[in-house]
Each structure stands twice: as structure tokens, then as C-alpha cells.
Amino acid sequence: MKITALTSFCVDFFPELDKTYVGGNSLNFATQSKLLGYKNTSVIGAVGRDSFGKLIENQLDLLNIDCTRLYQLNEPTASNKIFVHENGERYFKADSWNGGAFDKFRLSENDWSSLADSDIVAMPAGDPNLKELLKRRNENQLVVVDFLDYLGIDFIKEHIDDIDIVFLSGKEEMLGQLEELATQTGTLIVPTLGKKGSVAFYANKKFEQKAMEVDNIVDTTGCGDAFQAAFSIEWFKAKDVQSSLKEGAVAASKVLNFVGGVQQIHH
Image 1: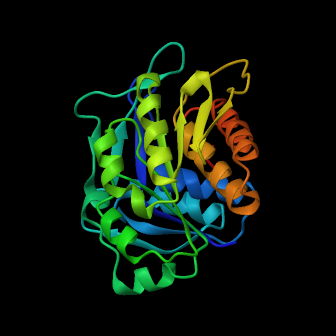
Image 2: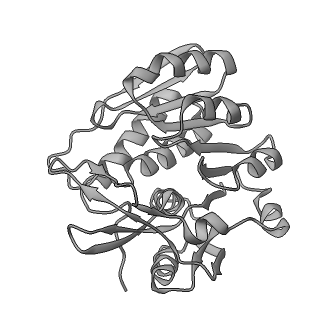
């Protein structure tokens, strides 16, 4: 199985802790895929020619994730300032995000060609390359897109026809609309609900999964990305919604035990 994650690579600053961690949806998704034993995991994207870009490259190298298509641009590496409530829930401020190299990067023809034999292709919906991916995807691929928690239902509707799994950080008041959308389109829609677990709408059915019990929640960053990777892999293999939800929940629970989206690896 070949898995490719596009194109979100950033550093997460935790100002209250005075710490910097590598992250981004795509790095987190690729890391989880690798930890689950999928050796043929690669990334496409860009970082800056700066120390933060080097941190991201080192992390990918140490995990043996194929980063031959991770490019260096004359832009700062994307960064995100994350603040953490006492209960471990994260929050952001208005100036938290700096897109840098992520905002500027576009895949080349060569990059698109390299994607043709990927079985699973994962991308966040805020990616500037999203429309092009959906236009160029092939029908044998499982294309999974994370709509996060700030892109509304209209944005999902606009893109859903060419997506196999829609993930999002859901709000309970959206669930009715999402269920309706899944019924209309036949697309698998999976909202995660934090400590309330996760839900999936597929084939006119609703599936539910409780969050796994965790004694001490340190930080929720990256939980959704780990969930998505584990869910997508299980779905690709077994086409079983309930077992995919469970695999996702197990993966997410492990990320709650440390700060940052992935366990930082050092030489």
C-alpha cells in the first residue's frame, strides 16, 4: 500500500511552554501511517530554508518517510501558535497561523505524475492544491480530505463529489446536516467530536465510536490526524466503518499523552 500525504508541514509554537514542535496535518498523517507499519509512506510539500524546515526534514528522515518531494522555498516554514487550556484542549488566537511556504507551494507536473500510483492520498481542505488534486485524482485512489473545524458545510458541498472520505472536527449541531449530505452524495463523512468520540455517516447509516479512556490528557494537538490515518488505512483494507472508527480512536488516544502532534524524535 502506497500512502502520500500533501502538503501541510509546519512548526507548532507553544508560547506558554516556550517550546517548538514539528507538525502539520500531512506530517502527522504520514507519521501515523509509518507507525502503523506502512513502509511505503511519502510526502509532497515545501518548507523554508530555515531551522524550522530542517527540524521537519530531520523528523521525516528519522522515521524513514520518503521526503524526496519535500522542497525548500525562499519563504518561512509555515508555523502555528498553539495555546493549551488546563484541561489539555488547545485554542488559537487571531494571529496564530503563518502560512509561509505552505501557502506558496504548488505541485509540478512531475509531482502530480508521482501521485498516480498512490493508494491513499490525504490532504487538508485549506491546501491551495486541493482543486487540482480533485481534478487529477484517479478512481482507484482513496482520497481523504480533512475539513478541520473552520470550513463550513457549503465548502464541503462544493468539493464532496470527488472525495472518498470527508473528515472534520465536528460540532454536534452540524450532525443532522452532515448526515443529510452523506445520504445525498453517498460519500463517507466522519466528524470527530473530541472527548465525545466520533461518528460516521455512510450508506444511510450512522455509526458511533466512544473516545478511548485516557488517564492524563496532556495535549489534543494531532489527535484528529492520527485518527484519520488509522481510519483511512483500515477502511482501505476492510471497508468496515465500525472497525475503522475503532482503529482511529485507538490511534488518537495515544497522541493525547504528549505535547505536539507527533512524538518528537531526536538523534
